[in-house]
Length: 353
Image (cartoon, rainbow, N blue to C red):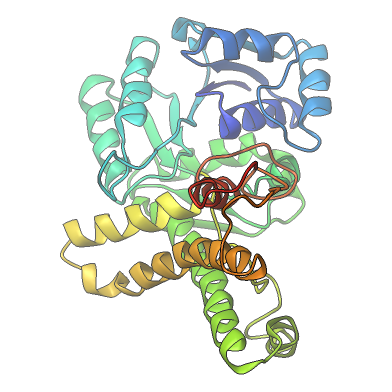
């Protein structure tokens, strides 16, 4: 199958190369000339374990190319939208300008019978809006929402060996056709018996943000317990081990520390709250505000701890901060707790950092 991937950042580049590994011919489209050129010459613009080898192998097959020209996507049966949805400046909501621009750019090449698949993390209602636009401007075109569940540091594995597939498809005469096309895209993955959830647009859009909200809640929970452990003298690691043996809870994501950062969890839970407010259901997600507060408080506490071990003042002290990315096995510094702490420490007057 010939497939286009619109947006070749972290999500899109990994997805494009992985689709080639699944047997398809893929063209990746991105407005950033330097990024497209780098990818086309097998130079990854980010660090991700296993991606460099995957990129080289996919390019060597002759079935992967990159371009800044969306007309190169002409003739693809399936078009994936993989652009970012950052937090709006000064607001909690998601900025959809890149999704809208990518969707509109496809109007230059989209033909009836071709399928547009959203993978970007978007507020509920986005897919339905795009489906209406395509229905009016390219009658007979198809739309689905297929959320991604990549973990930085495990993105290649999560793409080629996902723990589930989610298809958001509108009811109608074309639903079976869309499901069949997506099954063809993910043929080897479907053949392995990977669990598949076929649902409506709204549910598919909510899956990623709901999952991230749950994980963020779990991380902030153990960090709240860490605050209590400091006050009581208890051992938060042993506490996490003990409650983690309960299979209803599990041990994953129960490691106390600086909290979460990166380009997904923080902005996704805030966008989730913002969208709930727009829908008049803001009270359902008020707990996420405290999840966010606990997470940010951990950064402040780290600075306090540093000051405490330096006899109450960092003035003139020599301080080293090891690590800048928001998590291991990544070079992503978006909303990095480490850099936030480093900046706060610098304001305390150490001689170097």
